[in-house]
Length: 286
Image (cartoon, rainbow, N blue to C red):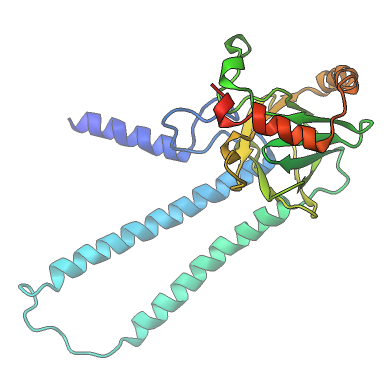
């Protein structure tokens, strides 16, 4: 019995400290964070683990203190309560200690914040624009290559291609690994948020504004994300799918993508909105 309990406790601890799952994909019953695939994500996850240790320690300390107070100062054990108005030492301690803890948290927090802000002299740029309820992507450094990306409906999912329900898209974002990529994010209607957990990215797209972040993907693979800002009734149907490939594979993809999307018809924005509402809404995903 004790051995079983210890095994379950160890498994729970491991799952909280990190989930060794396929990069960029949520897993059933997952408790920990996805495996980091970029320096930004690694720093965020390390900061998360530090915060978790601090929070857990404080929670245990407060719990033990409450138990001690209940046992030591209940009416039976202490029929005549002590009469005092204050304690200078305790008041100083419970003021100074939280300040020290907040400083310990703030220093690495600001380091992560400014590290993720932007990168000097990026190797390439990806512009992301959010709409209700799809994304458009543009590669300004590569002849303005651009395309729209919609969620694949359930009836169109091809399991032979390892497509995921509510996560796979018809046109995927392809990015090279080991490359400093500047990401510019905006929106064309309401506020959206472009979030890819395994890459440590979550940035709002605001109409009329251009927000900036960056990423350097270190592992080839497929990384999924979703819109993380409530943007209307189909907010949950705005997945993000990124394929991280080698630089040589990226060059080859650019050649084929330019031909493919150059041949695609240019649609009026009203037609695009109509398509989004009538072909990619929850009523049509079955």
